[in-house]
Amino acid sequence: MEEVLGIISDSLIKGDASSVEELVTRALGQGLSPKLIMDDGLVAGMAVIGARFKNDEIYLPEVMIAARAMNTGLKVLEPALRDTNAEFKGTLVLGTVRGDLHDVGKNMVSMMFRGSGFEVIDLGIDVAEHTFVEKIREYHPEIVGLSALLSTTLPTMKSTIEAIDEASLREQTIIMVGGAPVTLEFTKAIGADGWAPDAASAVDAAETLLKRKGLR
Amino acid sequence: MSEMSSRERVLTTIEHKEPDRVPLYAFSMDPKFIRHFGQGNPLKAFEVNNLDSFPIRVQNWCQGIPLLASLVMDIPEEHQTAGGAFGGWHGVDEFGRVWKRGSYVGGALKTWDDLDKYIPDLRLEERTPPGVLKTYKERYPDKAYVLNFHSGPFGLTIESMGFEHFFYSLYDDRELVKEVIKRRTDWFIHICKYIQELGADYLVMGDDVAYKGKTFVSPKDFEELAIPHYKRIVDALDMPVFWHSDGYIEPLIELAIQAGIRGLHAIEPPAGNDLGRIKRNYGDKLVLLGNVDCVSVLTTTDLNLVRKEVDRCMEQAKAGGGFMLASSNSLHGACTIEAVTEMYRYAREAGKY
Image 1 (cartoon, rainbow over the protein chains, first blue to last red):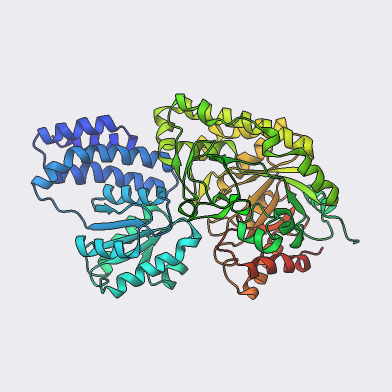
Image 2 (cartoon, rainbow over the protein chains, first blue to last red):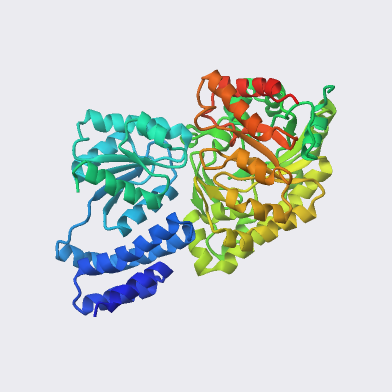
């Protein structure tokens, strides 16, 4: 019966959204638990995609169609996941910082985290410091992700972190930053907890940071 | 060696010979530099910094608003947040790119029906009035003239379709992607031929195909989708064709050379490019333009750091000619006046052969 999970995973890797939708529906119909379908079907497939992307075996288009297939599967799965109170690995509150309207990188990060079993609260683009603070209070995320493409908006990453610090919200969350102009040196300089060079690496980096901070 | 004119210096460099000093180049300047150095006159800003190649501008529009609009008109406050060269662009431009307050936010070209809508009319003499270039050439006869043209066929296809839709379309409707690239190339060649006749010495084709650490698509896809059209551009023109791309482009260089590309800008260091390695591997085939770090160096006012960075570029790429010193991308708004001034001033000393 669980053979279907391997086929879900393979279909996701190929980016075959309609097969993933059909197979997830079938797996639920066969009585497999939503959590098992999520972990051994969808997340397992995205893990392969992430590894291949890091090894330069595949590129953005292949990641995007796999992520699209995963989202199609998730739409079928999510009501059942909610019904069974299945737990996410953690929650990520994510947004492109104030003054920056770019979202391709942020969307990639969102998809990779969703595909790895995290709940993602995507705040969109041009997100003000106070909005991040409000959403952290509302969702209590383990991870906050700040994205920027423009060099000119890098200072806003810093002011966002300062606002989160001033609101005393750092204890139970880690702050990660990313985007084309962001470097490890910059990450340290502004007091962020972590950074990753690309969306696929961001999930690994987040999991390491969560363990280090005792949040996992 | 006696002092060369700018044009001699640039043409000698393009022939991979050592001129009197390394030529100075810029792909584009934020309006802040044009205001500061040129009091609003782009060419004056190039002249003040002793840049050896003067740019030939090709105008583009978004809802009737031209590039660098902030230099010539008042931009409504609600449209000017990001500013820069695209300040005032708000809506869909003639290529199908969607702008919000001066920032690119997506693409409008989604279907075959959109194709005709977003391949712009040529409007040759409106884009580059021949009289203007003639006047420049009379006033600055010793300069080289470069067509810095950021409307290359592949990057613009991605932008006009939007990144996500482009990537999906590679699997859902690859023929549409191919047709957009083909038609953009046809348009690009028409414009370039016109500018060549006006007197351009070389073309720097702006075509962004990569980001930090990686190319947008695989080298195999790039070879299939872009390279045949790069070759068409090279074959259609008599002037040397250089290529500008953001991001990490090293995996694509061999393919670009095969297509006939003869120069490379901007070789961004933070994206993972290594100027020294590219010089060693391809320095006999490509003129290299770059790569003073415009993320962590030109954004400071630490002039020692700027000089060190210029020295690094010279050490890695100056020997044997075939090198022009430039920023590792545009001179964007976060670069400082002090750093840019010092980069060009010091490069005139450090670049002597």
